[in-house]
Structures are given as structure tokens and as C-alpha cells.
Amino acid sequence: MELPGAVPEIPVQDVDAAATYYVEKLGFTLDWVGEDIGLAGISRGNCRMFLASSEFRKHRGNVAPVLIWLNLNRKEEVDELFRLWKRSEAEFVSEPESNPWGLHEFVARDLDGNLFRVFYDFGTPGRGDEPDG
Image (cartoon, rainbow, N blue to C red; front, top):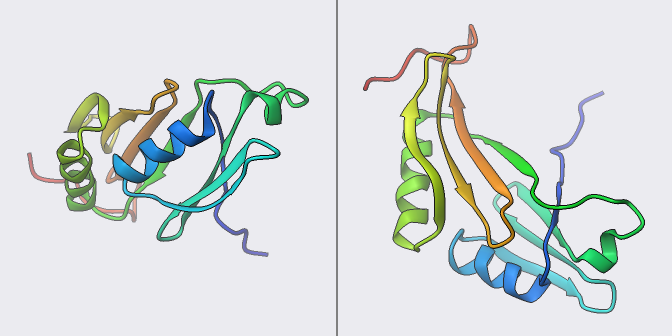
């Protein structure tokens, strides 16, 4: 059985403010907002996520910050996404770099301190060759 892509629930304080950040800074589409439950659905291509208020999360106990890994297919995709997010003035923890552990990656941050580790895996056999630079 093949599993679908995971859909993370991202803890946020203000769903509207978070949705605006994800749309304006990270290029996501706001698919829907359930104001009565404190939950919103966002997407970008095949990447889907939920933005969840503290009220929505209170029975589950999940809190910010969380770390979401976004696995891209090529080093150039990582670099291009970084350039796009940088132009829109997204917040970053680190810039793209190829690391000895086989990942070309950068880390971005949202308004609530949640982190996005955007990477390409060139170190796992069969995934790719070490990128230049």
C-alpha cells in the first residue's frame, strides 16, 4: 500500500495572520478557513498543510514550534525556492548550503517560530550526486 503525502498541522496563534504570511511570503494558496473551529487549509502544488489555532489544538496538546521537512527533487529547486522566499521577505534561520551529511538545505521560519527545513538529499545512494559548490 502506498501512503499519500503527510499533511502536517502547524500550530499558530492567529490563523488569519498566519494564512496571510503563508500566502504573501511563502506562496501558498489559502484553500479554506474554518473560523468557527480555528483551522485553515493551505496548499502549494502537492504540499498541503493545516494552520491550527490554540483553541483547535487544546485537546491534542501540540504546540509551536514544530519542524516541517520539505524534500525537493534537486539542488536547483532548493536554491530557487530560497530566492523566491527571500524576494518576498520571508524569515530565515539559514541560507542554502551543501552539508557533509548529504543534504543541500536551508531553514525558514514563520510568524510563530515554526521551522521549514527545505532540502535535497544528495547523500543517500540512488538519490543523486553531490552538488557543485
